Length: 194
Ligand code: HEM
Image (cartoon, rainbow, N blue to C red):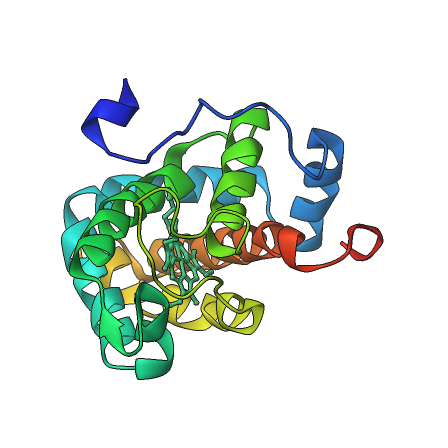
């Protein structure tokens, strides 16, 4: 199973429950201007970044590691937990590919809910048996849309696609990350407000 390859990665193993239905997801996609063309461009982006995920993660982990206000979530009392950082990093790499190539269906929605809970105190630290900060504050999850989007541009441009195609892949990625951050806000807000 996926689990044996990637500890803690339970894609497809969650109960198929999510805070929103497929119909609600469809209109949420419309709200971030996400179309079938974006789907196509994301799949292309998946090909483009498939062999670059370690380099991308170096950039993102460099960003987190150089900001104590972010690194604190991977440890306690200012001491980062290297095992926790490494375990999460592997699933983060898988997430890049999943975001590009998985169909956004009920299974995908269910895993978005699972990752949302893993950022919130409901499930943070459980998967890797860590004892780090108990919750990632929502403001940083939303703010992360910017670095996770802007730093992707060079990687999308690295395989010689024309400027229009690169821009299209980049925009599709931006929409996907925004959609993700929106879905992950669910545990943080009261039900009627989501
Ligand atoms: C876990 C992505 C925001 C810290 C993860 C995972 C992914 C991810 C893919 C692994 C999911 C899995 O278990 O399969 C993202 C994205 C974000 C975001 C796309 C924003 C759009 C943040 C922020 C922090 C952070 C702001 C703060 C430094 C962590 C930590 C875990 C984690 C500590 C491990 C949670 C656990 O205990 O299971 N993130 N993340 N993330 N992320 Fe984020």
